[in-house]
Image (tube, rainbow, N blue to C red; front, top):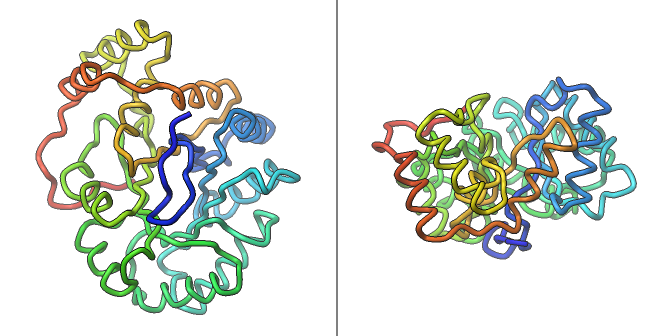
Length: 281
């Protein structure tokens, strides 16, 4: 099973985890079963946020991991408008209550906002000293944001940057991914299948994925996940609303693409020009 480190001194995590954005809109029993099936098959990294369903996703995760907390690498996120020093601590307490746990393995700032990063990071440090979070990071940070964060926090403190990354949106490969590689920061890919936009089988890219999948006894989505996690800092957190989908995602853990397969996918899904702004959903 392929693993990548979660930050400079963080644990080695399996390269595929479980996302929960919009999971609260699925049938609850199916969503809980999907998360538990993922855990059963090695998808221990579960990511959520106070924003998702206004806390409903955290409550769902809390139900799914009840009695299994020690098996999970649990991540949640604070909204920027809550990210003052006092607001961050209060938001974390609310998330812990919804998740039915006493700690988070990582706590992230969901995107840059108006509160000073110094205050947010001071709150993270306070929460870490109290044992309520074990490490912290950021999400949707472009290189200038990351430079500012590094200047404030110092090296080795930022565990991850969670960003939009899928086959048809590879903007992070221009600068954000190399920055994370240089500084020992995990890059966590959210929406790794695109947002309801996975390549159709009759497209050039879809055919490339299907051909490789057939040759490797895999699925096209497993091939996509293997491509996205080919570089050491990258972890992916696809959402699965059904157990069968979670099991399919878990199949990517053992799939390592050849150089020729990577080259074919790279040609089928060109990286494109560097955008002026970091794409996000």
